Length: 231
Image (cartoon, rainbow, N blue to C red; front, side, top):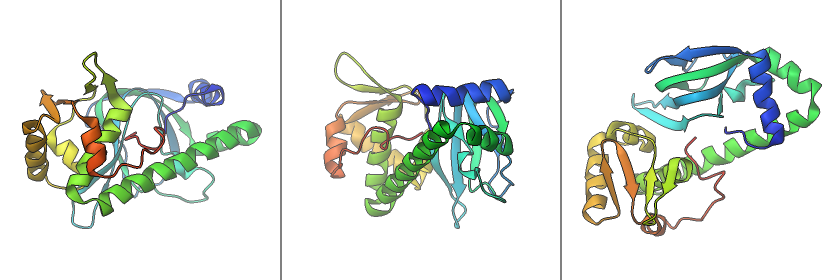
């Protein structure tokens, strides 16, 4: 969940005023799937993946969250709740940590912020539904194409040539986790897209040359940008 407007900035302020500032190293785990959910986290800098292990033991990455995102947010106002996913640090990061009970009390004292928080949760639900729909209905190719579109909407920078540079490095294994498939399958599909000049990649960075091709291939419904994201 990424926060942006005035009310959302006030929630940032709640974390900065009442939370604990921490630094975490790459590969650290913020929380684990199945652990008691006691705290909410606001990402100041860095990148953190939110993933879940499937029944077959594969890792499915649901989100890649950057600055101004909140993670662990779904546990508010539940008497007893557990994390459904694992949060892993992708690069050195800084966060503000606020206990679930403290944030609940602060939101109860400010109803307007409570309403904003509920709106964000609804947006998060729509994002997750959209991602799962693409993974289930569009096959492996559709999963990759929709993931590339979401990455471009979240981390993309439009260059003078009109191409889109995804300013976030990812290994093929990490992309495979986002698509719920194997690294070998991703290797083949990315190389095929490169062969047809749909995209190029160098040192983990992807540049998309023909975004419309990706959209046409999966009959993209042009969802609002706040829904079609990877964070």
